[in-house]
Length: 306
Image 1 (cartoon, rainbow, N blue to C red):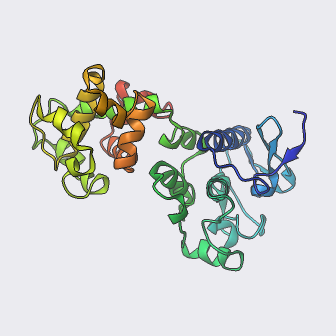
Image 2 (cartoon, one colour):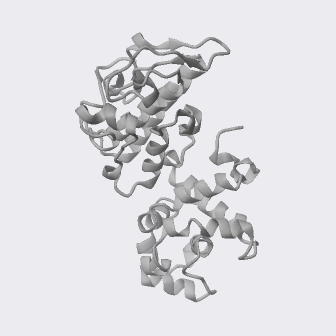
């Protein structure tokens, strides 16, 4: 592409949609390299270039390594740049495509926080990487971003997602997909007994989603519309999902003051519940994977093809 090129290190991007797209493009580039059996080995903000059209280009392939057809790992002489190298690169262990995913995690955090490194100050970075001492507190309440970055920078390369898996992460989902996911989770356990394995396992995620009864986190006028129809257990994650689903289905009938608070479906509505319960999507995403629902047709759109 034409146009001058600026590195994400040189510009601050605060618009979350643009950040999402840049990281998506970077992962797509890595996915393409990996599909050709190429491991870049030296990804960092300086060679992750942004064209003036806002596309991402991966440059500086000097250290990249092509894997043979049946090869998934390679011996390493210390390649890469201090602070952006995975633990196994620093330690000189055998390396796989996962070294690039580690670097993408560091670059992603760098972009999302306006230039802050998830492993701290430059002099301490490699030591922190080897020790697994990261700090994602600068990501604030964006739990989708935190979950993605933490997965990408996992100490054990086997715990990092592939580029394809990372591209399907909830961080990249548009609002419509995120809301639909919550409704699909609600439907999946709707007819289950409260003591069933599926519901018990779901409720184990409740403490990560809300502290104390969930009605206390929501606007009073919204809770009043809930009370009109049926009883809810304010300590239950399943019932919270039920409330989100039922009021989405009856959104048109909500009083204006409630509509003003909860916003329009899907963007405003999902944003309202994510603001109140920042971990709701990522916790249910974990739950769905734990239960093996990702193989079911109603959840296939949320995961890469098997």
